[in-house]
Image (cartoon, rainbow, N blue to C red; front, side, top):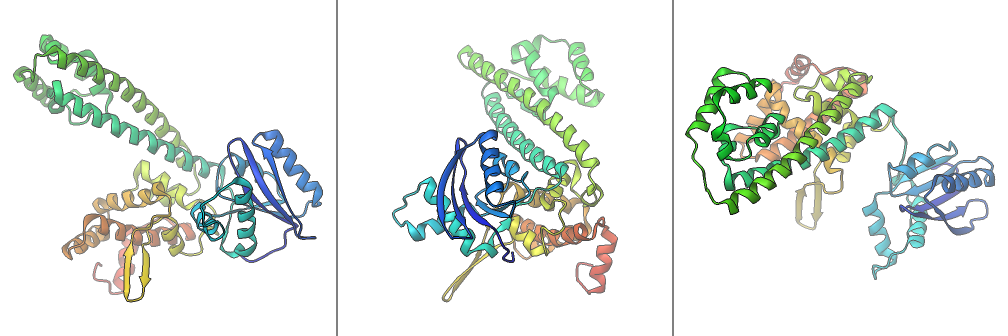
Length: 411
């Protein structure tokens, strides 16, 4: 960023109870320390005092946050400009002055002020995107945490069922369904399941919209032929209780994820950039909103595709010292953001001609699946950036024609 005038510069060390700050008045260069509580009243009082003291002139604040309650609160004041410093960068900066590893809040506030003063051009100004974009960002992120928890529960269920009721793993290919949960709750062990008549089983599957006759017959036959793994109640009873407990949690999670999907879809379909991100092959209803949130709606946020590649963690890092050089995975990035692009690239192979060709060519060269997917994500970001910047939807034929004009082998 280019340097501009501020009446005061502030380093703010945030916490969940109180916030330490270090302020320098640009008029007299005087430095002062202070603290205020993390309450709406205290934050408003502190900001109002700054506004009156510096006569509505701009004030720059440096902190280790890009979002959160304190950020949303401070950005309500038009005279305040917030600048984000990467926590790891500040930690390394601290080591220059305190090699012992000592750390306290007032010192961190001073270091942020010092960083803001000496490295202003390296800092990113914090700006809030449109409300619906920020909602998509948070909703998709939280949904992913529930999905991760669902995967853990399914893994625990699989292990427990193998111990006493392995038939369920043959009858059901997907355990993360209400059908599976209701079935096991009704027949939690093989003994009870054997007592169920074929008519009851058929009626159950049909009531859960799984009424294909061939599939029902196949499941009933598996149940009819099944024999118990063990008759030891010391094994069956504890495992059964554990499975029913996990199923209770799983059903709750499935309902929560479904409600998230409904809200995300509603917001995404009404978003002004919906058509752009829905046009990418393989994005689907889950990944398209995540990709939209990754780019945002502010077209000035990224000046080129390379910035997106670095910001998302897709661009690799070169480490060179003397005669040695190596390229490795970028660690300092949002794991969720990086995963969004990697997952999309993997899905695009099924639906994009050039993506499939690119994948197959690189695999034939001996590259691993993950390395190829990351390389594919790297290329996709360049395409996405151009579509996003120009407000145009993606068209496979147009891209293939462009490749052909450049005499690209994939065309």
